[in-house]
Image 1: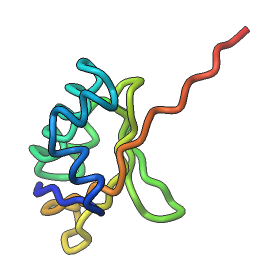
Image 2 (image 1 turned 135 degrees about the vertical axis):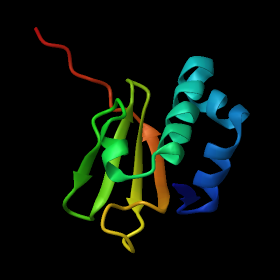
Image 3 (image 1 turned 90 degrees about the horizontal axis):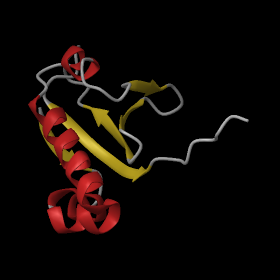
Amino acid sequence: MDIWFGDNETAELCSRAAMLTARWGAAGGMAVGRRLLQIEAAPTVEALRALPGGLRRDATDDTWMINVGNVAVIRFALDDRTSDGAGTVRVLSVSDQPAGRTRR
């Protein structure tokens, strides 16, 4: 799939290893970059479902989200010109993973 970005800020963050590292550290930045490459390499939505990170659809705005470990969440939209979404992914945001609550 081709990857496009929803805005210049997201494109700048995702397109530069130094920006990813500054935001999430060396290991986290590499993990986010690797997940973006995996998304780009996926030919269909079914291939995206096979990626680790729990691909899920947000019914409120018809976007998709996938986790990058405990580091970040990538939110994207699929090209709706094909039935399986193959073609283009528009990355809308990459945000910090919310801190998990610990059980007592």
